[in-house]
Amino acid sequence: MNTQSQPDRIIIFDTTLRDGEQSPGATLNVEEKLAIARQLARLGVDVIEAGFPFASPGDFEAVQKIAQQVGTEDGPTICGLARATRQDIQAAADAVSPAAKPRIHTFIATSDIHLEYKLRKTRAEVLAIAEEMVGFAKSFVDDVEFSPEDAGRSDPEFLYQVLERAIAAGATTINIPDTVGYTTPSEFGAIIRGITEHVPNIDQAIISVHGHNDLGLAVANFLEAVKNGARQLECTINGIGERAGNAALEELVMALHVRRQYFNPFLGRPAESEAPLTNIDTRQIYKTSRMVSNLTGMFVQPNKAIVGANAFAHESGIHQDGVLKHKLTYEIMDAQSIGLTDNQIVLGKHSGRNAFRTRLKELGFELGDQELNRAFLRFKELADKKKEITDWDLEAIVNDEIQHTPARYQLEHLQVSCGDHSKPTATVTLLTPDGQELTDAAIGTGPVDAVYRAINRVIDLPNELIEFSVQSVTAGIDAIGEVTVRVRHEDRIFSGHSANTDIVVASAHAYVNALNRLSFVLEQGRSLHPQHPVTAAVAQA
Image (tube, rainbow, N blue to C red; front, side, top):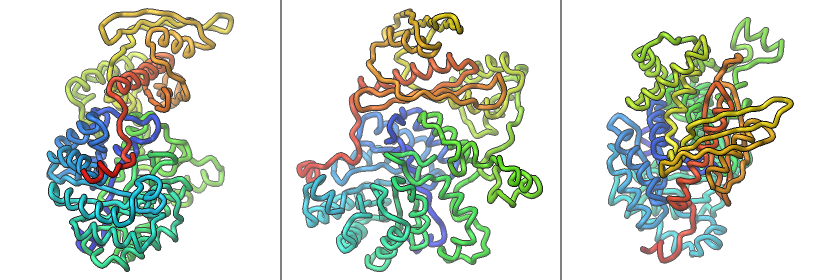
């Protein structure tokens, strides 16, 4: 595969499970990663960067399982990230080997500031390592991607040399990362144009781009890169990622979809062509966004482009009048094009398991028997409380059930007493990892504070609650409330999420989920960060 073989299509490379997971508090376990990977496959992404296999046994297992279960012949390419070292590349090769279409993505920094302060290497050493490690990766897979980290701040002449050597060694994709979100669109476009003009063998590889949103320019940079020859875009759902995040998949895809007549000529197509520029099924965008938000515990801001709650809302009377007369007066895309359907009433308390399973399949959820049983019980409980159950309610139930937070502690019982002239008091009973039932009580400033204080008396894990968020899934007094909490332990952040018609119960479960994640990580040890400096000894190992 090279730029010449598919010059008129944009490849979508999703790194939600790797770079997106580096968002503070967004740590996912194996089953959650697998659930998201399945949804990414339904969405139609071309490549899933499933993780950094050398980082930890958990990351290795997640990449391997995704390769086995999602990386089928008709599924996406499954990619593993590796620093330019033999240990990293070997781990990545082993993890992605079950996939029908495996890829190894290896990288090393090329900017002078990284060479001097992080790698402590000369340009000649980096040039040799890049060539050798790409060749080593090529001995395992045919599909090798190479990234010169911090390319946006690298000397162009040195960058051209590194890329030429990497392609000669077997790289089939050359990724140009704006690692620190520093460049502007015109600068980033010029970098891509310079590569197409000065790297002699660039026609043998696809040009990819990766960028962070520190200045809010990531999507604009990518679109400018497309105009100058980039044909793969590395992005994440909801734009999650380190610091200010990555380029958002939904924004890129819908920009290319809505403005395809503008972009068609840059891809050698007639301007009037209606053919899609990507393989993405845009009707899966909203559901994918919701799943990633729920599982990572990172809410989508209401004014977020494409998937925010206000993205298709109109408050202005002039706008409302125009939309009622003709949608195109103030809407450039249809809400249904991203899968945002009406809040449809679908099931009630008399609905059976088969109807429940069928509707979930229609919504795109494929659950195992155990997950289906748990979700069906939750549905029946909800049906006793709510007269009308919507698709959004079902999504909340299912997303809550597919979160496989390591269950070291389980909330067995919760009782709360509060009022305007009484002290909020909570009694909790938790099942501990060794099977004991422990009960304790506490007084707080409110019911949730009392619950959390009581839980802390049972679970001895020092932490600081840094975020507590509640939002309703639907309108109405009986709506399901979704609660997300984030706690800090030392320099790590852990999130928990839960949904229930009782927000105090949801709050308790969300907090226990976060503490379970904290407990799990403390037992497993710290994962290695993919941009951890490479020592000279390791680089040559």
